[in-house]
Length: 232
Length: 232
Image: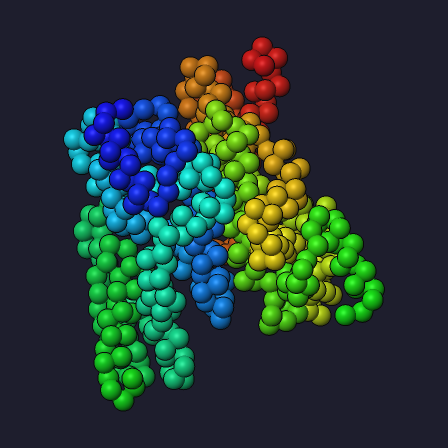
């Protein structure tokens, strides 16, 4: 290992808040499958479970009034690829990931999937290198920002939120209608209209899947409703 | 709490290999949502993560030569409902689960979903009642039989196994064809034929989903192939 990369790994361990007893675990966790046979895929499998555990416990304790459906969605919002990749970027993993040549050339170190996988692999490596409880603390620290940002309001999808909003006011359910399908078979886009009969209100949105377009239309209606002062 | 149910809970804790400091957690873990508002659903969410963690670590250590795909499938084979329900039955949970009247009358205590959920909830309750590491040990003990039984050979699905078997012999891929769809829209069944052109061999199977029928047909062909002595 070169002195420069040793320095980089020391700096990384400072940012991670954990110093590896077995440096080969750190090395392996940072190694993408494009670079070596002895890569981070098995560690990622292991770390995935630990990350899930940490998120589950955090939400369980933080939201004593929420049911398991909300807790599951909260957890999913944090353990999803984009969210873990953002954490990996904050920890400065990009410049430490070891990639094969073609991945390096194509900018693999910026790719969400590679970053999220490396973060999970690091969690697995810390777990193997220490104890479950120490690993829980370390990973909890990495995720603290993402865990704090997640809120039940943020994770309930617009269609559900709209329906609950209307239900609470005794109004009838929204209607969704596909008003246009365009594009080739493999690249269609859907224009969906969401209407509230009781309010003679409608909004349209376009999405690459019908369900996505419905969500966007629901969101558009919701923002209209929430802007109307007498219903706030 | 009646003396008889106290005795039953003491016996259960002996079988679980864990004695609760906070008996109300045990009570809650055993309470199905049909019986009370303060039921085991949130604990189940928590325990699910712990059970996944224990299985992940066990397979990671037990199969150092297997890739993460095989490890994931091994874990899935143990954390799936039927498997956890079997563990719950071995631990004698059935007679300790607290159900609402209608669930009790309809034999809910024998239902896989109710048993598996209660087992996960108990894992979550042990975790809250002790430390992560103690909970890992206790849950590892519960799952030990299921973990030992799982093997890479056992978890690869029939379609994959069939394809790998044929590939190893340089034969062409099997073909799957839906030969009949019957039943109402919400309750269809699919008859699928799996054919091996190279061998002029075919088998049919019926399933409630196309994919399921394909798997069953692949399994039928596989068992024919494996019974043929000159290919064993």
